[in-house]
View 1 (spheres, rainbow, N blue to C red):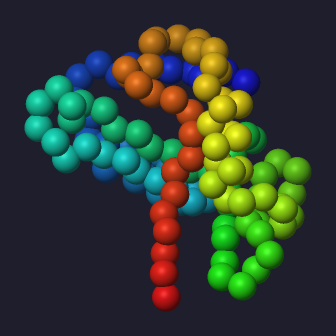
View 2 (view 1 turned 90 degrees about the horizontal axis):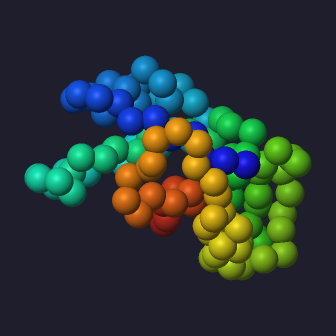
Amino acid sequence: MQIISRRIQGPVDAAAAFTACFADGDHPWLLDSALAGDAARYSYLGSADGPLARVATLRHGRPGPELRDGAGTRTVDHDLLDLVAADLTRLRDTPVVGDEPPPGFRLGWVGYLGYE
């Protein structure tokens, strides 16, 4: 596995790029900075469509998280946060091909917590 990184020169409308590339994908996401200045220059967008994508769903009353990845869908006997921590450790030293990614960029999980 490797990170393929490419810098795009000039201004890019992150919302338009997201809509064009990922809005119809599986679990699409857009992380866009609302800050002003240098801290606001990065946007991250993607979806769970790639061959290495993993989607975990945890529902109240179920025995463990349901994990969907290239191997199929199954319930795993792990705490959800332990599963994420193990992935972050495994991905920490992933080699980069192309342009150097933004400072602090690491592969990881994108998600949300819902409630009812």
